[in-house]
Length: 439
Ligand code: ADP
Ligand code: ASP
Ligand code: MG
Image (cartoon, rainbow, N blue to C red; front, side, top):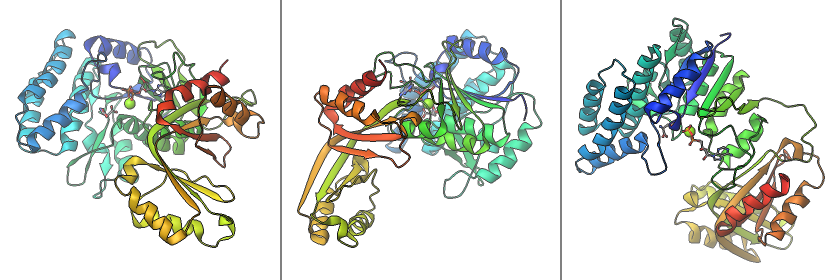
């Protein structure tokens, strides 16, 4: 659809009546903003609650037979105050009561959580005078709980071609039995991307509380610079590695359809934000990085054996041990006589000792060391490929900050250098890398 922008607003953008006002003024300032995807109300300040968290909590209370009236009251109050402050002509108590009843009667966690977006969608649609389209009608999930791209595309195209403007709540859809299925946390980003791709929108706007994708997490680095333009590939690496601005799966639908994403700040709409594109052919970025991101809670298992490389099937045996324990690994950097397995703690759980024993038994390594409490940091940039000296700047910055690097891995795209450091050095390392490249 030409001249059609799909506009997604995150939880903080819709956390209060004041935020709703900003959203209305953004939507109405460009008539191309025809389809709006809201999240559930997020935090109004750092001590506040996210409605989605409260809904999950209600569901958990019911499962353990604990009364949830007090928690539900917080939810009711939030929606009622938005409706009241903005004098929106809607009786929000009717759906609120039904939802409370459904949760009490044992509705699923996905159903409970999805109601945050559903209610916000009802309110926002009324406020914008847009049609409300329930995501359960058009976002289709398979029996196995995965989202069905083809069926969704047909439904979205058909339904949206009939309306001028609509609000479609994010984060959920339904299977063919009509049961609500939610995406993983932060999934409204995915809904926006699916809608944009299904109707071939001219742009997917993602409005949040920061002025775009920043070069580093603003909770770690003070006032990091915003990235003006970034490729899907770089963004994928950064969001996978912890830059949580955009759900990591939100890139795929729009990338396939060749639709750009613009990340914008609801609180500073005049800022240009970040444009996420397919390819950038400038050479300006030569030797520069695009961003840095990282994640904690990894364990590194370092294995050493002389002449490992010439021993047939050595790494295969290691990988089949991991497979037999149902563990997937994050990275596997290797040298001539060494190989390290970088594994997320959530994967390893309590299987560490068994895995180490099994590697010893089947592979007879010269040594095997386990480093728990590791963080992995990705330094990403298209300008790093073929540029000399980038790694030198990176490692000397870490050395100067007295940080011990326990693992190094460079992706074959040459767009990403991964380093493993102790979790206690994580924040210091991210700051050191950022400062070295952003002088
Ligand atoms: P929304 O509720 O709008 O979906 P999120 O909380 O999911 O917003 O994502 C925005 C947040 O992501 C920011 O407030 C910021 O704290 C965090 N963040 C982490 N890494 C980055 C980064 N590299 N650039 C911008 N924001 C980041
Ligand atoms: N409200 C959901 C969550 O908190 C989805 C989203 O915000 O995108 O995860
Ligand atoms: Mg989000």
